[in-house]
Amino acid sequence: MDPFLVAKQEPAAGGLEVYFLPKMGNRHGLIAGATGTGKTVTLQVLAENFSRIGVPVFMADVKGDLSGISQAGGKNPKVAARVDALGLKDFAYTGSPTVFWDVFGEKGHPMRATVSEMGPLLLGRILELNETQAGVLNIVFKVADENGLLLIDLKDLRAMCKYVADNAKDIITEYGNVSAASVGAIQRALLTLEEQGGDQLFGEPALDLSDLMQTDRGRGVVNILAADKLMSSPQMYATFLLWLLSELFESLPEVGDLDKPKMVFFFDEAHLVFDDAPDALMRKIEQMVRLIRSKGVGVYFISQNPLDVPDIVLGQMGNRFQHALRAFTPRDQKAVNAAATTFRPNPKIDVTQAILELGVGEALVSVLDEKGIPGIVQRVFVLPPHGQIGPITDEQRKELIQGSVLYGHYEHGVDRESAYEVLTDKARQEQAQIQKSQADKQAELQAKLEEKERLQAQKAEAQRIAAEAKLKTAQARAAAAQRSELDKFIGSVGKSVVRSATSTVGREIVRGILGGIMGSSRRR
Image (tube, rainbow, N blue to C red; front, top):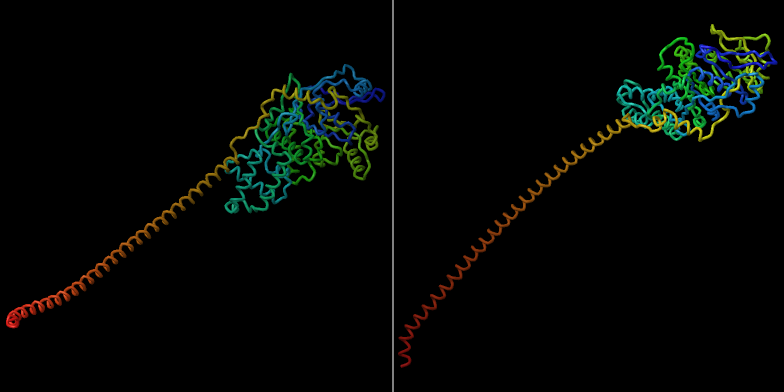
């Protein structure tokens, strides 16, 4: 693969040209310099050249001014002046095939990851968890994996955290202690992330990495992630790009050294990757940067200060573009000295002094040669881009998005059955079982109560019947007694009457007989 021109001296200064070898594109690179010194244009020039030779490119548009790469330039007088100053012949203005992405789905196709793909290490960094909380998050992922529960979006993770907390006593012997305080901290962090719009980062359809590695009529597609809004949460921005890089590392096969990279990844605001990164994450980053070149991927960090990149990572950056630095503070002076000492010396250049004097678009450039050895540093002007410098209009962006072959695939989210649905259904079944058990117990108690009431009613009825029988017996006895007394009374009265009647009749009979006897003699 033929080398491409990236920088040149003005003819008056000698006209020295610096060519970039595509086969060394996977040896990584660094674009450094203070604000306003030309880093973005250098990034655009490299991206255009990689695209032209058929290499797909990914870059995050932090300031919103990279979208112009999709359109042919020619309207910028400064670019025209630089073309003339460098004596560039047959310089043609052209745009590059471009696909726009946006986590929030506003300025490009939605770009999503699943919670499982992100993993506990990167997610713990987004959530800014401490060591203990990160350990609990690891347990949550482990339990989910062993139970076949998919963690796709944030509601899945919240449901899984609740499940682990509810079953902490059952898992403590196998996984360790899970405190309610740690789970609560994770849940609060998830709520904060959701309020920042992080819930749109997770879901399906998740990004298919092959969609980042497309070509269009032999030219590599330039994938631009709209990151101006994402940058409002720097941890989310840096971690998401790290996830993309790690996914490329994990999924791509080893290919060794190719004639050109399979893909080039530009990582703007690189200091955010390394700021406050835990040791475990730093080790992963270092390993990934060191080994990903064997997968055919070139990584280019863009930063204001070369000190932002750890030495072990900086040592992997074979292609260097150093724009001007400002030495206003002792740290700035240290950065200047550090940058100067990392270049292969050029006896014609005082590198330390040159770094302070470079003009806009001018840079100290050192690229790898055929043997992978850094070239002698040269003070040159980076070539102007063939595409437009600055952002495109909203109408142009909308037209490109809707005209993309990917339009419609990522625009509509899918919510398939995952941990949230499974655990919610399980909780619903358990609740239904509890309610059924409670209902059964209530029915049993009700049945016992009704049986008791029935027995009490039977007893009361028996008592009533017994009482009525007793009363009837008493009444019968009383009536019998009364009859007996009456009979006695009647008998007594009857005897008296009989005696009286007998006496009277007797008297009458005597009186009649005697009267008749006596009377007749008396009346006579």
